Image (cartoon, rainbow, N blue to C red):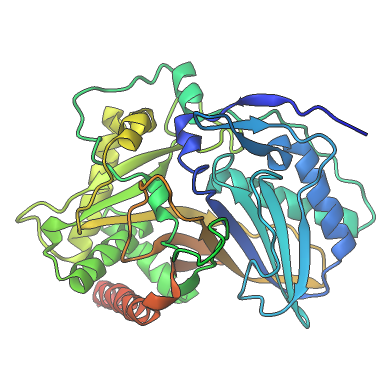
Length: 419
């Protein structure tokens, strides 16, 4: 039977930046116990029906890409036996077919289940909401019930959401040199024969215990900052040491979820990439302590939000994309997914950990910044702070040193704060 695909709309600039390199993001739960694959498949099908962008695909139109509905097709579920640390083992990922996938990697009673979404149609907040709903459906189905999901329309681009809230582009701001956060996708070695292949990065990780994380949260509260501020300050101190640069030559850029920063607020899955960008450059004479840097980062964010500068940054993406890529050695990029809630699960299945992954194909447009620090993703799951660094295999030794330095900085400020 022949079906006619329906064009939904062209991608907006905030979405197009992730289409050229086919940037995908994975959200992975490490499980122990018996996983019901039939229930998982049914749950995934249910959320794909409820969120049609996941089952859509992208097609080039000569100027960029268009979002196209894929009637009658279902994103793929792959199931392989192997190392659950290899989150995307066996995955077949292609934006011309679907914009989501589910990857299951089993090793006895230990299993990794990873929801993969294309960054053009969903950011972390959006995808994590879908992930939670999928596990809720799984629990219902495992218990013999039938999930009742609300059908959603295709999500809007942040540009349209901001326009509807009368957020306007500010002129005269030095944002044209800002690196696109598509640069967060780790550098990929050029393939020998097939330039359409994904090469999967390795992951280095700094993970704190519950007690250490709680101590950092208490310290952040007392010092007028946040855990993200402390983690970001540790990243800056680490990069200054590894790159052998003074702090004042570093520029820290990170994404900011705008959903609760505009009026009216925006729902978790109402938009694709509802992200603004914030910058922090340590000022001369401002001090080089972790607490001082953390306060500076938090104060700069509050100021940028109060003035509206952060909220309108997505409107500058066309200017950034048309400018030459930045080459400053001191640019540091990171993203914070915040607190990851435990999803609802049936008895007999337990979540032990949450992991992330971001992959991309070779950057033909030349806009991806080559980050020596790799892709940095900050999150908190099960009351444990985690800083994951996705990186190419050839930088493994450097990443091990990076993790040691991050842990040392966070440990030192925690111990000092408890004294």
